[in-house]
Structures are given as C-alpha cells and as structure tokens.
Amino acid sequence: MPRGLTGSTSPDSKKWNDAIDSERTYTNGSGTFSLTERDAVADIAAGDILAAEYSSGGASGHTMVVSSIALTGSGLSTSIPNVSSVNRYEVEVYDSTSSVHGNFVGSTDSRYLTDLDGSNNPVNDKGIGTGRILIFADASSGALVGWTWNTTSGTVYQGTDSTQNADSYRPMVAGFLSGPGL
Image (cartoon, rainbow, N blue to C red; front, side, top):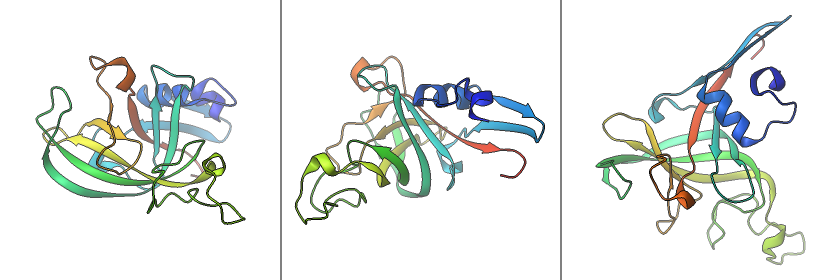
C-alpha cells in the first residue's frame, strides 16, 4: 500500500509530505485507500501523520504519528512572517529520530537519558520513541503556519512559508489514512 500512495516501498518524509499534500488514493483488490490532508490544525487527531519536508540538510524531512494534541495558547503574537497571531498546540508524537525532542533536564522525550548503565550519553538518545513538538496555526484561518522540534520557548520555529529563510523553511502537512480495515 505505501508504494501505491507514495511511489515507494520505503517512502521518505518528502514522499509522505507530497502524498498527503496531493491527497493521493490507491485502489487494489481490498478497496480504495486515501490520504486526506487536514485543513485546520484544530482538526488534527491521534493517529494522524505529520510529514515535514526539509529544504536544507541531509535528511528529506521528518515523519511523525500523532499520539495526542492539545491547545496551549490562543491568539498569541508571533514573529512568523505574514501571520499576526497564532494558536499554539502541544503535540505528543511517535517517531524515530537521532535527535530527541528536547535534549534538556526535564525532557519528556522517552529516549532522553535512557542509557541502561544510568549514564547520560546523548549518542544513545535516539531510535523509536515519543516526544513533544509545538504546532502553530494561524489564529484567523486555522492553517498550519509553523512548528518547533521541541516545546522550549527558545526553539526557533520551522516555517511552512517558502518566502522564509531557506534554513527554517520546513513545510509540514498533517493528514490521515483511510480505507478498508483501517
């Protein structure tokens, strides 16, 4: 099924981003499977896919599955270009990463400080686990306009607007998979 939706048997984050963004469908003997994009952040639910595409760096992006999402601020001022105010959501995600979401004392990432010998070697804080990110929605339209890798206030947001600095342009889409047996 991933190949029918993304064009690959092992899709990277860019392929998931593109497939959700274009709302691809695939039909086989079991029926029709569809990826549907969420138009508003407030509609994102547990089980949805978040797929970010990176315009710089070595990775194609990052793909996460939503565990939970909660509104943590409404009508907040922002430095996101062309957006006057945002609603902020904290999202717990399932993913696999080589860099935990919040490498700091008090981090809620399940991979942080998980060394069996009790030591703290950041090189071991990777793999499959849960972490938390922030997502920002335009307070007027509800559209996803930015996100952060973790929940600390000093985190630079990742913009979803291509007119931004290339280093922070990392468009993200949210969507869900539907079809028989799902």
